[in-house]
Amino acid sequence: MSEIMHHILYSDRDPNGHMFNLDDWSESIAYKLANDINLSIDESHIKILVTLRSHYKEHGPWKAAREVLKLLETCITSAHPRKVLYQMFPGGPVKRTCYLAGLPQPADCEDMSFGTSQ
Image (cartoon, rainbow, N blue to C red; front, side, top):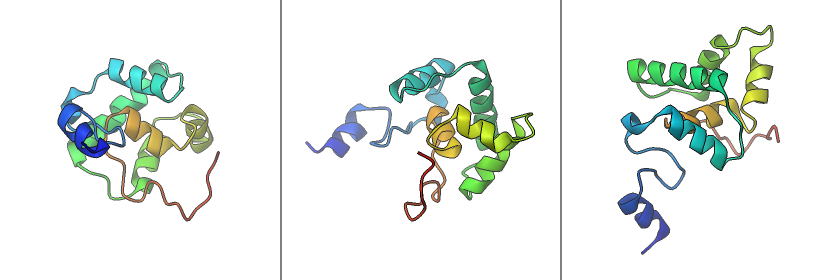
């Protein structure tokens, strides 16, 4: 059986790790997912994830990664919210927060034609 088919039949996540049923998410799942990617999170991270999930439930799928980033920036009270987000979620705040919140990423989240912050 192919690896993709195995994931579909026997997992609650797709091959990229995104949850099939968004209502199955919990804070404990966020902590486990963070541990899986070697990211240490705390209550401030969870507040951002909850805000992201609430917005998604109310407004539906993202149109673009920029929309998610602007929402994330409203969660940070620093003078430089984007810098703080990249420190909190290395590897890209949009990609990481969507993953940890159990939400699908915007289609333009990972444009391989651009460089990386890593």
